[in-house]
Length: 432
Image (cartoon, rainbow, N blue to C red; front, side):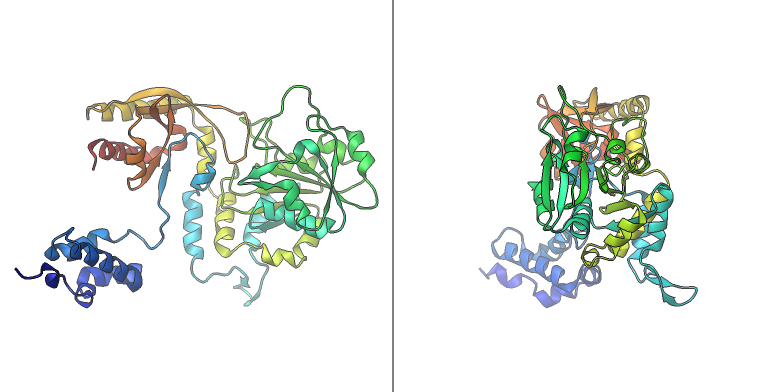
């Protein structure tokens, strides 16, 4: 009997297949060739017939060059760090696409001369927080703190309450971050109580600034005391407030979450925040405050290393000027609207003979924002053997397992994805 491996199509013949020619223009020759080689090897091992190699190659081609997959966040955590935190609005996504090519990021088209980088995004941020005399954007909130510490407190002291020496995730700690800049930390107060007297007693000729950090991923209760920005502004040292979550103005559902406008009105000299949390935009660090400090940071050599790219600037401007972000929509969703969506989905899936129920749920903000805040929600409850099948789908669906059942919380699923979620559940149930 002839060796069946001789019937396996050659690489050059496969790459000349019109379907693969088109794929090469979309995915690149190297990636397509790698898939061809993998499928040929499967045929040599006898896993597939030689004559099915061309179709197997086409079937094995990825949908895109990036390995990052789209995920439906049904966890009930609005800003899920492992899922990229804030999803961008359609307006922001369109802005990123427009900025992907050549753009006027540093060019004044009217005069043909160089212009301030990202001026439109900076103007949008300044308009959103009128209390800020000046604004600056860097690549994340940790970078904003590093820039402030380097420019304002290198070889000097940063006064910080022991109760605010937090770990911000993945092992990164505020004290370590600040010490890496060459600044010295002056700890005041205790873990649970810090007074104005503690801060005032630490201020001296070596003080770079006083830092107030919002402990955004935990809550301390009981016998506690902290000093507000209004009081800190009276002790004769610059005050920087790290609000963390990116809330620019007060939000009625999050009364205890600090916001930039209030902190500045209370006397903060600088406020730092994240753009990809409650603001609902791209990952970036926001610096808002008095011109003398913002300009000092902007002119520091480190600012160049920490600056954001044109895609981030485009997404940030669209988030600030455009319609409500998905994050804002998730926060504002009513229980009645969530129940109505769940009822429709349960009815559609129940007709497929699936074990599915509508249950009350508890959503959280996540992403280091609004610790302790619980948002009433509604979820679909499925058997506990669904998670792996749903994660393997396209797009992947990620929920949370509670009491042996998989909960798909609808507060974090945009309503326009309900049909997609329904179809994903059906495919997972049937093993498709």
